[in-house]
Image (cartoon, rainbow, N blue to C red; front, top):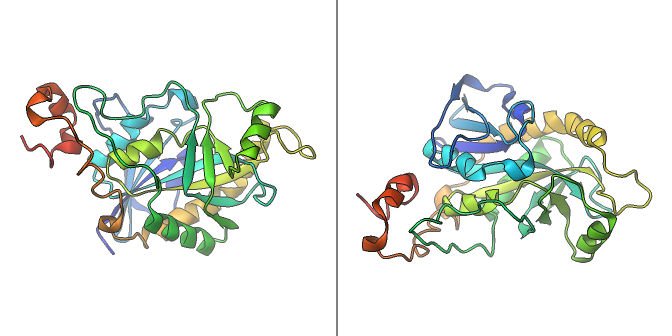
Amino acid sequence: MGGHVLGVIGGSGLYEIEGLVGMEEVRVDTPFGPPSDVVVRGRLEDTTLLFIPRHGRGHGIAPHRIEARANVCALKKLGATHLVSISAVGSMREDIVPGDFVIVDQFIDLTKKRASTFFDDGLVAHVGFADPVCDHLAAALNAAARRAGARVHAGGTYLCMEGPQFSTRAESLLYRSWGISVIGMTAMPEAKLAREAELPYALLALATDYDCWHETEDEVSVDAVLAVLKKNAAVARHTIAEIAGALPDPKKSLASDALASALITARDRIPPATLANLDWLVGKYFPR
């Protein structure tokens, strides 16, 4: 179905997709400051692609310093209809081998000091988040990754830690006992904000290592992580190209009207400045 706009948050090399035309860099102002970098916009047949390198070009932004609100807001303001996140993770299961892809469907949030909502200044919203991933988009992402040649695991729980340090061995073993699939540092609050922004969201996790729980493997190192990422970069780009032409109808996603029953502050009690700052998000519910 044409006319869709796919937002992608991930590594800076993801816009190097064969067939992507009309690339331009777009600067976007948001009430939360600038996104991690300029947004790269291009077209792949009937689909517009929007890319934000999560850590900025050159990887200069640490996980706990990423302004996820600005990233999601920028994509929404540029017309994104879907959001796919690509994230490097540690595997917490023997069968998820470094190099495998995981289509995450649940999260445990252990972040500590990150702004995690658009609604914290005079307007209260409580969105449902029991099923944080759009199942339609996740299914399309699963199929796209398989067509791209990846070894894919459908479903799994992503534990998001604060970082930027890796886990202690005791922490890693504790998390394993919880039955999680992968561990990373960037999915939260990104997934929560995507739901508040009413964007269908799915996450492609790229397993790079076995964290530090695995006694027969070396401890996690940046060099090892980067080596696996480099090897899988082409497959990740191919996956994005594949899903761009097979995006599901966003109106069928449970995210599409997430705010309809979530906004609880009386209209006459919302500060005008708050409504102005969030007009890109709540304008259809509170027309000016």
